[in-house]
Image (cartoon, rainbow, N blue to C red):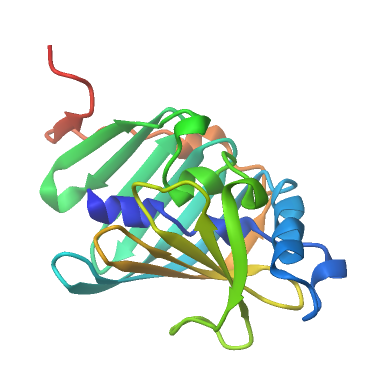
Amino acid sequence: MRTSSAIVSTALALALAADAALAGVDATAAEFAQALQRKYDTVKDFSADFVHSYRGGVLRKQIVERGRVLIKKPGKMRWDYTAPEEKKFVSDGVKLYSYIPEDKQVYVTSIPPADQATTPTLFLTGKGNLMRDFSPSFIDLPEGMPAGTRALKLIPKSPQRDYDWLILDVSPDTLLLRGLVAADAQGGTSSFVFTNLKENMGIADKEFTFKIPRGVDVITDAPSR
């Protein structure tokens, strides 16, 4: 489930794009974050292709995966991993379903209220605010991020269970998000690079409905009686 937290973490800032007025190199990190937030507030849904790389963690592993993501505010998301292994992570805004066909198991967890949200994904699906919840600063471009982009590091003002910091990788001319990096509490780093981004498509709610396959074990976070 740590892997699913890293997955869910994070790439959903790809909806962020901002005012051209603050796109110049002289904008402060705070101005940059404010502009991203303003644009982000206008984005109701989006889709993108992604490449997800994970390095480190307790097992010191390294993986590279590919797939497609759909996001719809508030709180709905769908991650379809296609290579090298099929995986699905689907949230209808109330429950999160994590499914790896090879394991024949579905994990079902409750989405916490907005004031208890911990993962970057929940923030990026409409349950947070860049300036209220983070301290922003500019940093050098992380390894693996697209050339010619600019990196904004976000440190949460309150300690988070699932991640220590985030980095948004943004095109300086359009301020479209090109990538995202998150560090988890186990010492791992999860990176996403996005392409083919489309915004405000009117994605139907049915895209975020998960039908549990026959013959799989269902594991929930409901307390035992």
